[in-house]
Length: 158
Image (cartoon, rainbow, N blue to C red):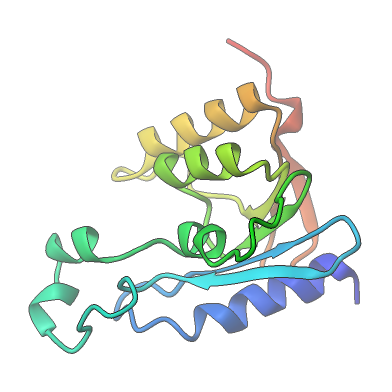
């Protein structure tokens, strides 16, 4: 089993900790030595009551939920540098999370390939892809078995 497989399996485990009723997402950041730096899953901010059912319903849930990628970055303590780290995530990042990933110094994303034609998210996925390309972030897409399937690092400017 490769390290990439291990970390994607860990991201899947971490996703199971989410209390989100419709989509569970997990993220793991590892450094250049394959040491876990942080974990994150989608959920409400610390101290926010997650037992109020109305907060779990769309569209309200989008205002209350912190994405797994963001939680993973925010869970870093002691000003640890994320420069050149990798993030393993069970869902392709949205554009907002991509901005935080870029700003944090993470250089590699390993995630399933999104449905580029998804009616709801295709514009967001395209922006994320563009942001990652311009920032020099290398994205590796994995399939259900966690094998590297393709890389966005060869994306050409149109």
